[in-house]
Amino acid sequence: MTENLANLFTFGNMQFLMRGVAMTLLLTLIGCLTGLIGGFLLAYARSSKGNLLAPVRWGAMIFVEVFRRIPFLVTLFLVLYTAQMILPRAPLFWVAVISICLLCSAYMAEIVRAGMESVPTPQIETAEVMNMPRWRITWIIVLPQAWKVILPSAVSYMVMFVKDTALASQAGVFELMFAGKALVNRGLDPLLVFATVLLAYFAISWPLARLGQWLETRLAHRHTERGIR
Image 1 (cartoon, helix red, strand yellow):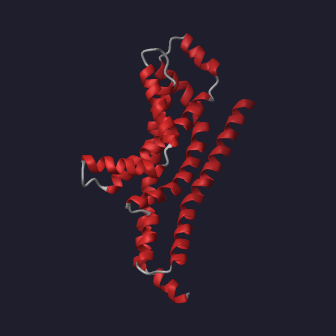
Image 2 (cartoon, rainbow, N blue to C red):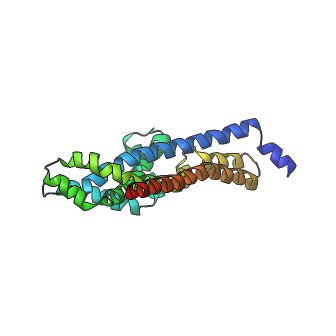
């Protein structure tokens, strides 16, 4: 056991694992930030009104429903093979990024939609009676109140998604799980390697989970204070 620990915890191996951690964080950050923007656009499109915007509304709804029900691994391989048809030497990193953004946008759209629907309807109706444009109602009235619902849920989804990025290794994308598999293939003890990978995922996820809990408590407390006033 001592020899296995010494073989694993070398500077080169730890540097290799840290590169995997950095890539996992990068994939999560890009995916969730892009997904939050895409999710807002999809939620905004789904809440549109009028017959002229019906195709936009239905298109957004179909996108969300499809990508929320397709496993991430299937989406990843669909994007991979489509990219290889268009660009045979497509970088695997960007294949993973596109797949992640598709998945995150679909899930974030539901989170944003729930936040927007939490805003009291009379406020929106009053603004509509005053002939305020829809984008202005969303920006001034809806979003400032919806964030207290959106942010905690979005952070909680990020925690879940950190673990889902491990599936990207199945397509050969370098990230934390791929780094762990590579170390095992070098002949290192699988139990020690994957125990270290487990601790690395915990070190990433736990602060995010605590941040989500803090945001939820903080925003709820602030909302209560405003209600008392």
